[in-house]
Amino acid sequence: MTDPTLLILASLAEGDKHGYAMMEDIRLYAGVTLGPGTLYGAITRLEEKKWIRPVRTADRRQPYTITAAGRRHLAQQLDALGRIVSTGRERLGTV
Image (cartoon, rainbow, N blue to C red):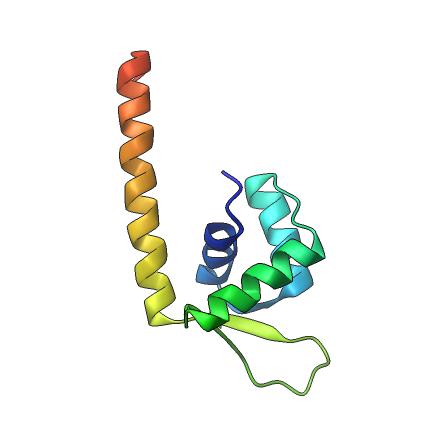
């Protein structure tokens, strides 16, 4: 799974992170390397949808946090993915 939206939301579900920390977390937990353009483009879209928001900081790096709406969206998407995985495993006979 390489959807930047879900990868970023899943990363932020653990706690607030800035861009580089998200990229590293996603690389470690999902084995997916997001380039800066992909990451920051997705961050912009997620902010527009109000699924994440910037956190005030004095640091030059901008951390983000997942919103309640972002958590709901992530949960819905993970439920849908779970159904797909279950169906695929059943059809493969590997339940």
